Length: 253
Image (cartoon, rainbow, N blue to C red; front, side, top):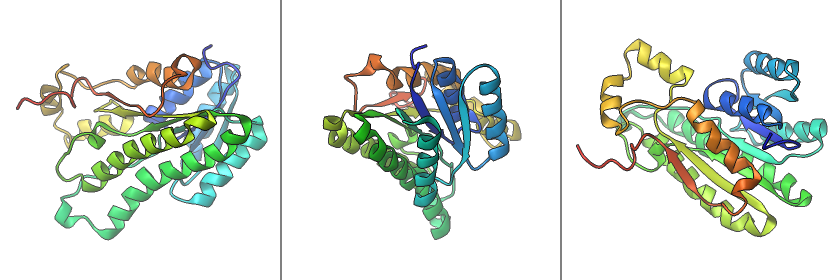
């Protein structure tokens, strides 16, 4: 029960990494707010947590809309009375040749993957500062650390999130707010598995490129997510930690 008594908000919590973090936080004793656009999925997950004796609230949010994010934070505060942990996980993937990338797709990617993260950080900090501190965790990507073709918007937004994490960490450290990021490599979420099953993702090539010879599982991120949220990491801020099976470190063809 490493997070007992804490309140955590997780965006993009209806599936994949966000869902995994929400369920693990609940098992560690945190009250959790699950937020995304998919209320049907959120309600089911929140119902499962509440039925098992935890505390969960499902809220709809559009992270690219400031008023929507601010409203989510206010409703969370009204329900649980405080917030200790903010996990900015919501994001979209985009793979389009750069010469074909439309202005609309560029703006949509940055709105969700960068602007939405900043809104989440800012709105959370405005509540954490008066209560004496808190923890913010941004879920970025190994593609914010290395480049990939046809992912100009995705790589640019994730790299910017890594730097945003560092800026906010040093700015808010005196206010007792710690800001860190997790940068996953290829993880077997529902989305990734669907792309694998459709044949659109060359899983054999991905596994060959990864030193550990496989892609990761959601469960392999959760221990770090708990560690960064809890008191054991109390002297840690401004870090971007990649969990990628060695992908970013590997420089051989």
